Structures are given as C-alpha cells and as structure tokens.
Image 1 (tube, one colour):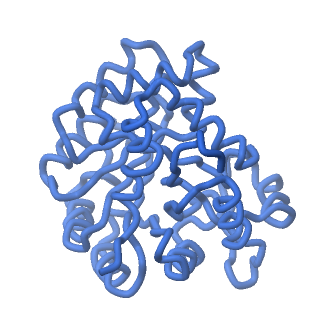
Image 2 (cartoon, rainbow, N blue to C red; image 1 turned 90 degrees about the vertical axis):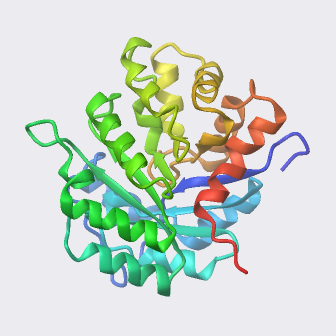
Image 3 (spheres, rainbow, N blue to C red; image 1 turned 135 degrees about the vertical axis):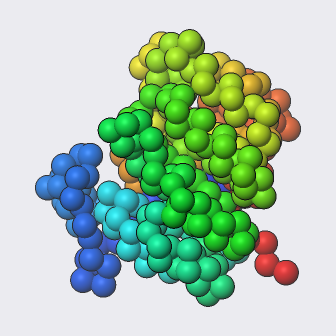
Length: 294
C-alpha cells in the first residue's frame, strides 16, 4: 500500500473453495451459467488463503465474508469457518431464508457459537409486488432474532432497478427495528437508470440505521450509463451522509483482478474529503461487520 492509498475494509467479499467434497456446491441458476462457474471454482477458487493474501498485498485490513449464493446457496459453512478463523479482521454474513420458521433459532445459535455479524436476505417480488421473503410475519421473527443477536441485516432485492415498493418495505423495517443496522446491497441499484428513477431512495435519508453499500457492480453500471463513478458516488454520499455509505469489492463474483477492484474503489472516492473517504472505504464497513473483541 502506498502512502497515498487510504485504509480499506472490504464489506462484500465472496470466499469459495475448490474442495467440493468438503464443501459441496450448488450452482443452480448461477448468472454466468452452471458449466462456467464450475470451471471457475475448480481452476481459480477464491479461498481463504488466496483472498487474505490479496487483502494484505493491497492494503485491505479486513472485510466481511459474505455468503456466496451462486455457489453455496444457504450452506454457510465455509464462510463461517473463514470468519471464525480470522476474527481480528473478518466477520461472516450468512444467507438464510427469513420466512423459514427455523431461521430465528438458527440465527440465535450462530450468534452464540460463531463470528457471524450479519444476515443477508435476497429475493424478488411476488406476482403482487410484495416481498414476503423480507417482511412477512415469519420474516419479522427473523428480524427480531437479528436484533437480539446484535447483528446487521443486508438486503439485496432484484431486479436490478431502484424499486419504490422494496425501498418502502426497507424503510418500514428500519423504523420497526431501529437498533438493527441495515445495508442495502449495490446501493439499491441507484444509477441504473435516470435521476428520476432514483427518487425512491430519498425515502431512506431520515433513517439513520440504513446504509448504502457500493460495489464494483455499481461502478461498472454508472460508467455504462454515462456517469463518472466518482461524481455519482459523491452524489449518493451527499444524499445520505458519509457515515452511511460503504465499499465492498464483490470479489469472487465480479471477475476482475483484486488490485483492479481496489484501484476502482479508490478512484470512485477521489472527490470526497480525506475524512469522508476514510469512512466510506473503511470505518463504516468495519463498524457494521467486524466484531470488536473485549
């Protein structure tokens, strides 16, 4: 790390192993295609040893081991093991179905026995436009369990456009569980369309427990839509404040070399003040996903 590079904490890293006997994979529905992802897992795994070495090489002090849905679905064992073995620099964000009646007890057990610091929820709307995987009665029990465990909640909805009804559901949940820090993955897809299409995001401004997480997916989309990533990120930071934006690389899913992902993140924050840049690239993610040991 050069003296000019700010401190970094990667709030969105996907670890996966080529040891498919010990950690069976389920690549059903993988975006890049099942055959392609199987080849990548075998030839170029992003396992614990590999990614931690890349972090050290690139000046990344730690990060969140975010369960890789495309490879493991809700079998969280590998991410949990990574987090448990590296408590000083890594917390694990698991994926479980919030509406499953067994999930609240599962969350409670994980919080007691492992270095799990967050739960990630993922899904698309039902035919009627609602999000039962996010805010149904059973899902609310999972939110209560996350609150009781002192964990964060990470929400990723699809399709990849700013969706007013999804944002409204997240706002209601943030009001219901003000003690739960919430990160909206990929900034809720801000910048995927016009400025007018981003307007629903204004509803989160007053909710201090909601943060936006930007990844390389966002940077690529902003550039493709004609935005300067540094200008667009500054706009989002101005909208919600520098304490509520964080960086995650999406390494392991976005297929770029890790040093390039770091360079893109650093460039995207170049318009921010040194203080705000430190928050966005390091402090905010660390505060949400790293459990400080007593």
